[in-house]
Image 1: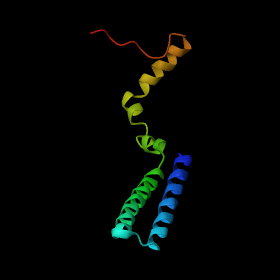
Image 2: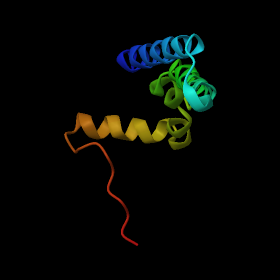
Image 3: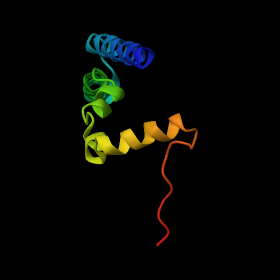
Image 4: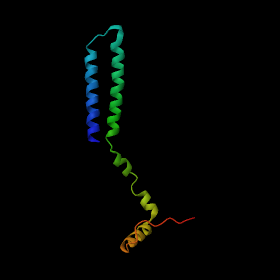
Length: 97
């Protein structure tokens, strides 16, 4: 994730430098204005991606906590541990219905 953040920062710096160059240059047929509009939109997208990259994906998934584990209950995990002690595998078999 760090390299992605560095790449986005480099992209943003390149876009702002190009915008600075265009602000001092006059192009024919009013092209400078359109180029600066496009660079502004690209800079906004890069800013948004940088803001989203601040929180790593693991932190987003970790926010669920142990909700699934809590749903199964402690008895389930107690049985799993007992089966491991007797070398009977870990996960119980599904009931055939």
